[in-house]
Length: 397
Image (tube, rainbow, N blue to C red; front, side, top):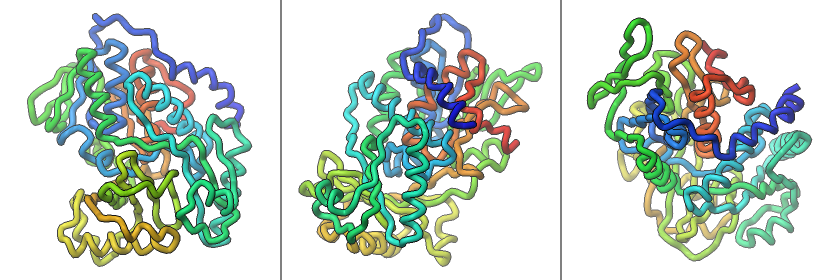
């Protein structure tokens, strides 16, 4: 059923083409709360349509989860069901379009993914084969270690014959990308208010008339909440699981040693054009350390704590990538991932107030540009697109 429905919706690819610009004199006013990649993409698309948009964030734009992400653009098998994976595929295509508009260089390296245990290998390959049966816009191949070694000659694939090569995957420098979007938002005549915290909604005659912020009152007709891990707190609703910490390690520039995005057992990494190697992993938090992370810090509270987790990640990496021990660590960050209760994105209007729109998800990097386009279309045309039916907040509220 999903397959038929989505193939029928291939016409929605036209969404990734430029919209017809609305009359710039329209009185519609929209505030977007949250200047990560999702919120900034939405504000960017709205401003392109001539909508009076104000983007606010309680910190600097891009300083939240987007600032400590692995920055991977992908449509790999863990994104289930197919509707979620399909949206990610459209996300890749949207990035390829927007990079031309912004004159931004994306590293389309492709990725290699594998696991060690036979059970996990079978699950991986079964899921990839299942995905390949559907309509796809991205290329996935299953290759053996000999072919993988041609692509990456410094990695030990342990004679693994089941390695997934996703040719379309890429990486961005998220903060740089967000700043380009913000420049365009300003150019289009809309506003970005940083260090401006949302506090409450003001109603007039039972209709939203403004929001109250730490910098004063802002008139608006509609509100988009793209505020990641703050979603539960702001809405006073349970939509997300407890945030999961991900550790991101950035090395100092090093000679070229990695070509692809590597998603290996217990670690993932890639090398930027400037020579820095980005290393990431999540789910490593030890129970004894839980009380030190209650406030969702972006950094470790001590050098010894940081070294403990960095060494744990590096030791895993050394099992298949010996050069990792030669890297000089330059920066370590902790990112907190917003995970919806069922893992799927939450995108759409609230049933009890159609002027409040939610856009929060784990795959914000991949989905940012396509979600920006789809949300902008729903907000400006006052309609619901069937491609987003699986992701409506009504499934929780």
